[in-house]
Amino acid sequence: MSLRAGALGYIAYEMGFRYLGLEPPDFLPTDSWRTPGMQFLIFEQLSHPFTPPSLAQVYSPRTYTRDELDRLVHRGTVKNCVSKSRYLADVDRIKEHIAAGDIYQANYTQAFEVKSSLGPDDNHRMLSAQIRAPYSAYLNFAASIVPRSDGTTQQFPSMTVMAVSPERFWRARGGLLDSRPIKGTIARGANAIDDRLRRRRLLSSAKDRAELLMITDLVRNDLGQVADIGTVRTDALARIRPTPSVWHLESTVTAQIASERTWVDV
Image (cartoon, rainbow, N blue to C red; front, side, top):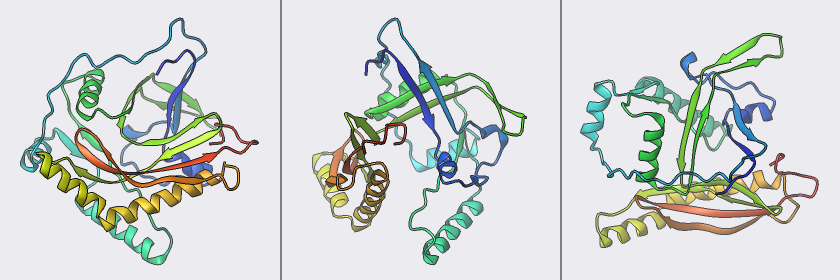
């Protein structure tokens, strides 16, 4: 990517509640995780084209066993912010909502705290070198004070955002929208035969195919809200996609942005 001007930032999942006119639920356990719903760094002009630095420092991949991960957790190196009992209770509640017909999918995640002797930039280099995903970001945001509608202010600490992902959420070019949702993942095999067997197992998995079909339908519906009628297409469904460490199932959904819409609407 070469960038002379533009905006680099993030929009949090919780902004979806604002879009729907709803108050986000109180997901997060402590004030230490309070972050703005969106932040962007705006560049009006750069004296030189911006090109992300290459990964000059290559780290050897490291695979942890379950016992090793347990020891890291017990030593406090990795700390989960949701107790096991709370996690199981939340899953039961999600199942109740599905059974009642309130929802048919929930993206339930939790936060982890990790102690590291490496700085954010070194951590990002290590993640990028090991995962080698096509989409990544490294953003530094200074501490900020944001005015509220009631005249008060809220202070947010400085933060660094690191992202390494194989998934294209959406891209807009020349009026064409392109989204490539991923559902269904299996680790690569230890050898060529094992790798082919794992690939075949993922392709034949009814559960993973059903989940991908569901999210593909959701993407079609979402793109349809900003697209010309009749232009939403599923160009590929359940296509196998390799990465250095895993196999993915991926779909491709495209649409033409309606003439009265812009990428900001998207």
